[in-house]
Length: 257
Ligand code: ADP
Image (cartoon, rainbow, N blue to C red; front, side, top):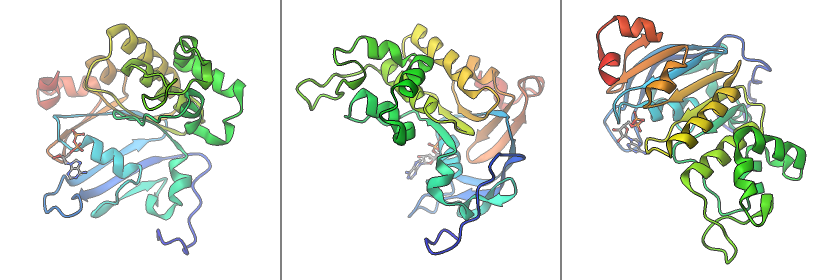
């Protein structure tokens, strides 16, 4: 159904039920090792779910399948009951605001880096400034001699390098540029400075208000704000439930924190 010549199923204008991950298996190309070994769970519309687990458990892979960077080798992922492979991939991706761990750093201007979230609005100063303000990227703009049109990157004579914390604010601004239905955050493992981290996190919470969100985090404070927590262990769902439910059963979750 992903063939260009095939008619796509329209994506629901509004997500009503949410996602269902149904017995999903996955191996990376050319590998016999299953990274996901039969994963099943639901993400309700408007729910905030956190994926936790040891390094290599399969959290990022699972998000990449939901974003359609890869297809499950077996099983299916449904959105409001429709297999996501039936949607036009670009249209489908437009519904997501993604803030990735190794977020994309482009050697473009600050404006372009923010507008990547919604490139049609690249000349819309009101919208860009608004996104920058909400994400704290306005602080980055303020310290650049070139302001919003500052060239970024070492390769340019007047190019300016950003710190990890500054890049994160820019990544967040991108997500604010679009009215995404689903917000995905893969939190950096390497710590930014504590204050910057707290500030960005606060803004992130603002962004996810009323929206379906998927969060990968290693930090207890972040995980706590999720409605439910999915504990992955070596490619299977070890536990799923609210923080209270998981704390009540002395298993993996408790050990992780
Ligand atoms: P987590 O996000 O929980 O740390 P990942 O989903 O990144 O886990 O990784 C799960 C497993 O898949 C790991 O064993 C990892 O080495 C492997 N893996 C991740 N990306 C690739 C890739 N592009 N090709 C092959 N194996 C990969």
